[in-house]
Length: 127
Image (spheres, rainbow, N blue to C red):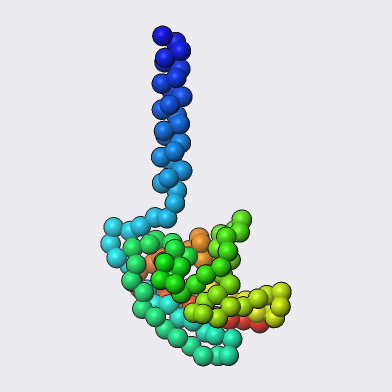
């Protein structure tokens, strides 16, 4: 009887852990969110997109639409390509800077929550 009870507790803990890990993935909003996405390329050209999404994390919303890509690091998504332009810090000293409502972002794209009506800008900057 003790063995059956112990096995049941272990199974419940395992199922709870699986549910917790599964729920930590991409999160979606119950309502559609809309924001402005601006891109300033290295040559100074600018593009503006109106984005509608149910994603609540900026990285998820922009990768889903195909506007950005990069690779996952311990800090989240490291953005290499925006609107088809790839920047290589090691090669050129250029990188994609994220601005939120005109202010340099204090969070990365993977930890930035999408706010309805906000403006997010990726600007190519060179050191």
